[in-house]
Image (cartoon, rainbow, N blue to C red; front, side, top):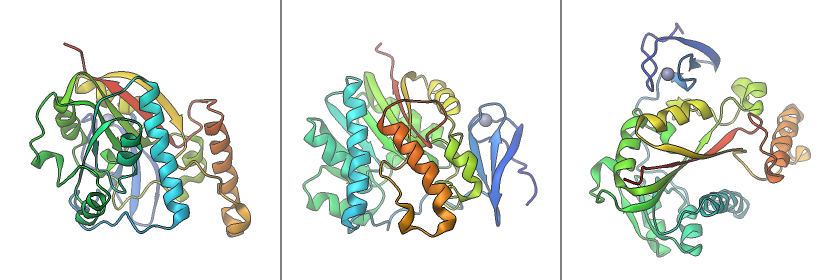
Length: 277
Ligand SMILES: [Zn+2]
């Protein structure tokens, strides 16, 4: 695989370095904005219509619900209240947790099975993509996107739409992986969150902030945490995964203690705000 000939999809820079890679995929980091991108790019961002998020095991649902609850905890602690739109709601667990916490919720999701599942549980949802829907501008106090932005070819366009839909002073919440965390640095291509067949982008905390600021949002809170909140039990894994399990558990320990050491965790919560006037 030769070096990419195109420019950084976020900032347009042609200055980048190779981070990692395996088989026929490579990850390059932009030297200007620090966001990274997959080469070759995933073939399309319209591949989620048939994704199934329900019917998971009880243990998996418990793990995902924990992550959803952490998101609602985070935005509530930052003072978010009112009308909430969850983009790419998937399992619908963020919508359920937010509804239970008192938000007025609506979700949008491309996956038809996910929409059917959410509707059967009484959630207020719409099927399709953000570009296709006519939510009114200035409608939402908070918009949440958990691991959505990396799946689209043009993340800035999605952020522009989201910003338009926020009320003045409203908040945009993002949960994204952090490829600069200790775990991905040490695990290299074995890090479980590269997903090169689906992820166009891999956002750094600094790069994500620059991207949000480029659409007029102000950064309010950044929390570095872990993608998964549960322990990995080494005895349940092949021995070659024990180093990964050890590192993961260190990150979970840091995370649960809310010590907040920069660059340790492999995930980031970022809350940004639309100007009030
Ligand atoms: Zn860049």
